[in-house]
Length: 578
Ligand code: FES
Ligand code: MG
Image 1 (tube, rainbow, N blue to C red):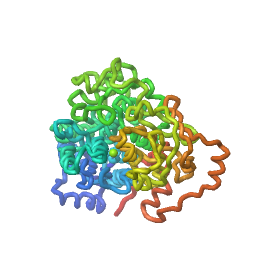
Image 2 (cartoon, rainbow, N blue to C red):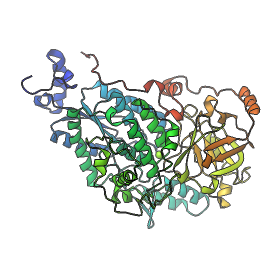
Image 3 (tube, protein in one colour):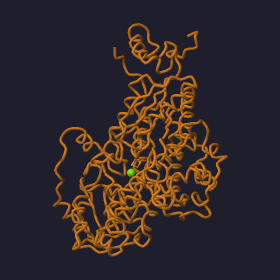
């Protein structure tokens, strides 16, 4: 065409169409006050926002979207904002994780079905970040992520309090009489002082850092607090950048390579990140055809110390992390130790090495150095195997008690978290500090949705006796803000007949983290007998989304994605609707 219009652009299949169809596509858009000139072939950028008042961590994303749109206009693109569902962690029952795959499906289909050339993904709360990345990866149009940023540090009576992490602490304090109910009410408000997601290194902050480490969000942007003006500046820059990414055809499949995932896994170890990253990264890798398994998480991190002193493993919070230099400072340090692939390309078109060249560290206590780390190498996430978890299980060593990492104790088995909670306050509960609390049927299929219930609070009678930690084993997940010696993600889960289903009260459970073993001290013949007597629990869901979920969800070691969502389905323009 002579007017410079790019007819090859995807959006032009809609807005550049002739005749009736083109008129329909353009005319209705003009009811928003758009002039005819915006259909001239400029890049059309979807601004996918998961803003929702039901997902408080994402509630401010509408404002962030405005900044993104400003950037898109500045760079000569046409921004079109659209809502996606929001899987808020705090309100959704039975668990937000049940809906991660649904949200990923929605994001994927919305991008593909619409006249978009590129997309900016606005996320915040835990599951929203992986869901958006998974969906966008399966379409593989240029995409950049902008996470909404953490809340300001919680402040209660002169001390920093971390969202999530202090909920568990306050609960214990309430149970043991160190806090009154009134004090707890007051503390609630002190913990959530501003817009934003959890400001601990929980799953939201972890996944924001993962998006940055993978190269899917602009360098330095994971840590800006939600209410910091530079969060908006970053959003605007992302809006500008996506327009150029469309010109460059820089797609997620170029960025999300095996090396990018290796970088992310190592960064997760260095930041003391959430165990949930294991599941989400494996699921995302599945979308782009990168082979990633549980063992990678163990193998790759053995040489990586924890550099960042943040709750739940340490004492600082995301605001401190931001002022200390944020993720670029951590990545520069890892790169210096040859622990990252520096040549990996990122959304800004530059490599990890280029992006971290000028990174500075301002808070030496918050972000430590490789030669004097916050916690030594080998204290991050460990992957366990053994007859209790043939397909693996996960433990976060930095959040566990060192004396329990090698432990042998009798099992006390609960068929659901509720069954445990019913008796947890019983002063005559038959447990002592050596007991291994086994919680089952909390896996992807069994719950369904694999909730964050694994770090059940200790039995009240033991808390009162001063016991601070016990070994817990579960096929569910743990909040990224949680702590304790908790073995998670046991696979296969009990509900599909994993060995966890065969454990009985009194069986000896052997936890040997240094040797990466989780074992049941029961001989094979006995386990076989029990397996023959085992019957699968009745299907709880025979219709609806929960049925679709339980029929298709894969086990934790495969990322708990739906089997049918693996891989990319591309961005071919669908057939005309008119
Ligand atoms: Fe949303 Fe923690 S509850 S980020
Ligand atoms: Mg969480």
